[in-house]
Length: 369
Image 1 (tube, rainbow, N blue to C red):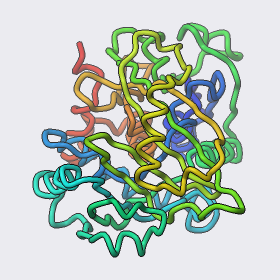
Image 2 (cartoon, helix red, strand yellow):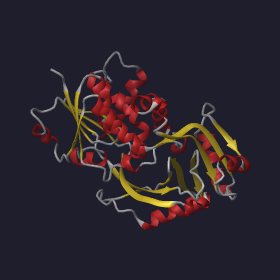
Image 3 (cartoon, rainbow, N blue to C red):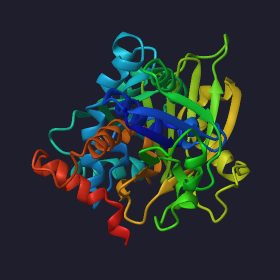
Image 4 (cartoon, rainbow, N blue to C red):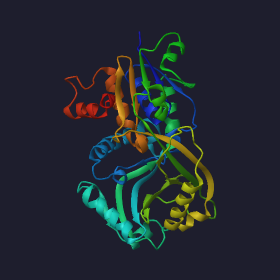
């Protein structure tokens, strides 16, 4: 009899894990309570580790780099040939609005970025040639090749379509207790994967997830506006971070980040949204002519050490959560890790490489017990 897997959570992490399980021969049902509050629905979906790097976070950068190398194959699998319909940019510009902002990028270049990273200094003239909407007030920046972005909502839909096409089931239903799985079908699933983002802490309180609220603004280009930028623009404006991420019909401007006590508070805060738009307009004044498409907020599931939680809770339950703002970036690697766990090729197996064994150890939920 085919082994059964119930996945709680239908965001990019849950769907990617479901897809990999289906490919390994599992019978999979994904339970999801809808789009509201789903971090992967709000995400800007930048595929780049350099912009998220900080001194002391070398392990996070290693994971992001490994996972990023898996995205091209996944895009080719779930989208149009080459993933063209899902990818919105293939390069990133790091832009400093004033001298101090540019110096901060220079510090990253000297302490976090390595000679192997495909990053080049670009002056103001080249910046404005590459992105005519950039303000002439910017002081300079860096160009990172192969650090692009995806259309997050199209990716989530493409993953859902791929899961269904391979025989998986998607059920719109809120799961409040793991024991509900026994009432979700004819029999209890052989394995359960908790991949419900911040809601995972309700199902498994012993995992110390931190709710980080993030807001993003979507702007739509019009027939009378400049076209969207061709590259991701990650800017520092008087010390504040803002990113402007291309979409096929406009841009995503993001993103705020702050811890909140109430994980159900998904109403965007006016002050944070105003700061985002003010900074975006300084970097790209032409965005003022764009149309407001939507303003959304979501809760990102973070952890105290900044690493996701991927591993076994017991013989029948796995968890994949705690990705913070890197859920989209880390989805392919997470799917591969969960597939290994389901197939029994986990940390204790002699067939697992030393590097993969180290990853299982670093991400194990046991580190919090």
